[in-house]
Image (cartoon, rainbow, N blue to C red; front, side, top):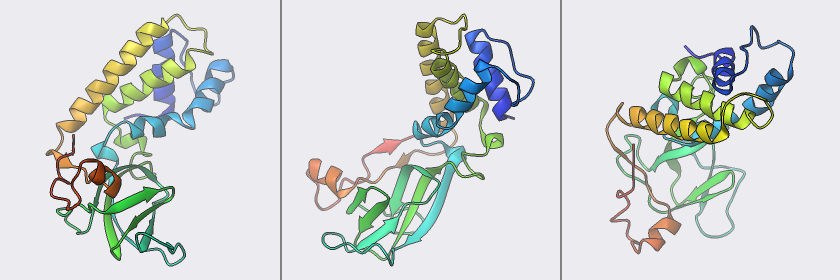
Length: 209
């Protein structure tokens, strides 16, 4: 089971530094890791459609954000949103919504409600370290070690760190893909237009694992 301290110590081991006994230990290594920890977990969550971090919600259109042209409804993105996995018009996620726009803090479409599956960094999803698989934990530790190595005088070669980080990422993605069936990512109106499919007949050709 991962904890912030255990991930810190894994990262320190990778760069050849001494382990911490607590998150309150003094010293530059811990301060560097603290600074990086603000963004590193979310960055790593953005790199895949991790099943342990998946959340599905129904979102009704916003009463305060009213489009002045184009799609007639706006839908606020959840506060714990990291990465979109599926955006559909039905609760069973069988009907990908082909015509929508993604702008800033909102999605825009011509329906009254949308069903969204996404990677979440919420406290009960990707933000809960006890849910992290070992492969993902190792990937985060390697990425943290790589980022910290510019300021921590460890013994690791940065070229080796990059190679190991990329390998642990691929391993984590491969193991995550084996946990469930292949899924389909709906394309938005812009991507659909690029593909030359205004009718949405090919909206289910984009796969993720």
